[in-house]
Image (tube, rainbow, N blue to C red):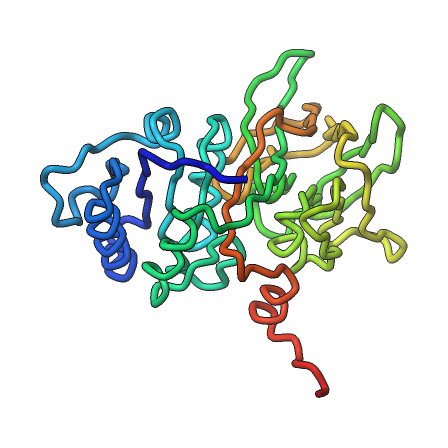
Length: 293
């Protein structure tokens, strides 16, 4: 499907020389090719573009048809939670470490952008989670998560007790360091390091991964992504807990609170170069072996 991109937003990792270099290349390239370019306010001062229009992330989402995020997966996640609310396509240039969500190499920016802007790309929809903290039957706080929602203690290596319910069906009561609820996008992030399964992005599923449970029989569970997850935090827990969204947004949880997790109504529209292959990404990022022949 061909998309016509007229206004393009540039978003990046602030105060990062490599990201600034790539942003400058992108800005010069897009202006040269006649596109209307808007810059995220956090990176505008680092670029040699005094005439550029500077906007916040929400305004970029409202104004742009394409947003280019320069940085690592963390930058992409932060932008994605906002941009998913708008009908904007998102592509990433990798200036981070792993780069599961940022496909374009800094050395191939102009080549890959030539392809994308001519309509030669793959568009993939990724779902997000909506995470809500309920207290006395009222929502106290909420946010979106692209990768995962994690219930954990505010202190390191402290156990808590909670119940897990899926679609109002009781699953278990657990004493552990916490619980990870991950999307397929997040299955290669915190969930993977906790022993969870890798879910390919086309799966409509969630993985539920216990964190250091006080039992040898506890294992990750995969459930339908349309399930409604409910965590009941025991009122007997001595101290407060936290539920984190992508490791960035922290929502405070008190003993006796409930955390409700379900699909967010918005989706992230990820743009991939035509050369993109998910299993190639896994092999490269996770250092898997090559073919025998």
